[in-house]
Length: 360
Image (cartoon, rainbow, N blue to C red; front, side, top):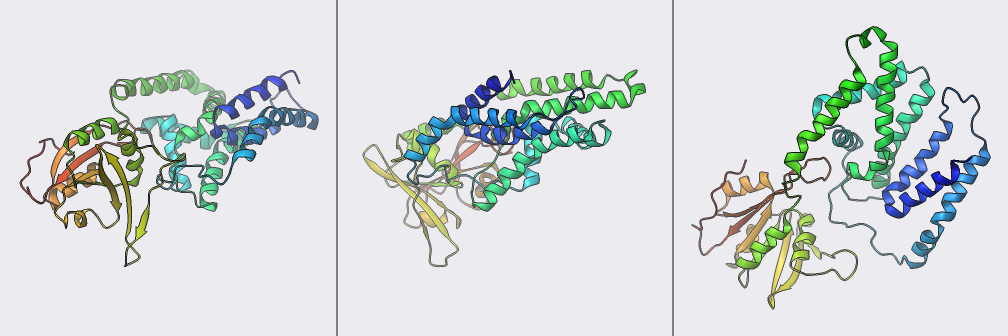
C-alpha cells in the first residue's frame, strides 16, 4: 500500500500533462491481474479502490472545470487525415519505437513468441494486451464517432516503457529457454547495441532538418504575391499553417474553413479569405484540381507534395518557384516526408522560369 499514493500522484501528473495519458491510466489497471512469481495471492480489492479513488480526487478539479466550461466547442482540429486501419496504426507505432526494418521485424517476432515461450503465459498475455488494447481502442473510438484525425506513435508514448519491459522480458525468457545459445550470443546486449545504434543514425539527419517549413513558405509568398493572386493547397491541412504565418488568427480554438459542394455533388471546394497588406487573398483547396482558378486570368500559387509536384510539372504550364524542406516530420510514421513544393501558374507568362532543382 505504500506505493499507492506515489502511483496516484504520477497518474494525476500524467493526466494534467496530456490527455493522451488517459488510455494509459485506464488500461494500466490490467496490471492488477499481473502476478510476479513471488506473489501468490492477488492484490485486495481495497487497494484497487483506494488507488482509483485517489486518482479521481486529484483529477476532479480539472474534470469539474471541463464540464462547467464545455459548450460544444470543437475538441480537435478537423483538418487532418483519417487514422488509417488498425494494422497500419500498429505497424507505424512499432516502426517509430524500434526504427529500421530488421530490428522492427525482430521485435515483432519477440512479442509474438513471448506468450508461447514464457513460463507465466498469463503475465505475458497481460503485458501484450496493455500494448495492443490502446491502439485498438483509439481505432474503434475514431471509427465509432467518425473522427477524422491521423494517429501517430506520440499518442501512445506513455506505453513505451511497458513496450521495452515486454521486449526485454521476452529476450530474458528466450535466453533462459535456449541456454546453449547464450554461450555464443548475448541477445539482450546485442539488441541494446543495435537499438542505440539505430537511433544514433537518425540524429544527424533529424536535427538539421525542418519539420514543416511554413515560415519559409509564407515569407516567400509575402515577397511575391500580387493583387488578384490565388493560393491553392493540395491538402487542407496546410491551410492553418499558412494562415498562422500570415498572422491571421482563428476566432476560436481552430480555424473554420468554409466549403461548398458544386453542382455535381461530387466536387468539394474549401476556400478561406485572409487579409495581407490591406488586400484580400483566398486560399483554395478542391478535389477537382486547380486548373479552374486560372480561368479568369489570375495567377495561382500551388502548394503541394513531392509526388504531385512532379505530376503537375509534367501536365501543366507551371514553374517550380520554391522547395521547403519537411523531410523529417512526424505524422503517422517517423520520418514522414512533409516537404512542400511551391508552383506558379501564370496564364499571362506561360514560359515562366522557376528554380531548377530535381523533384525526386
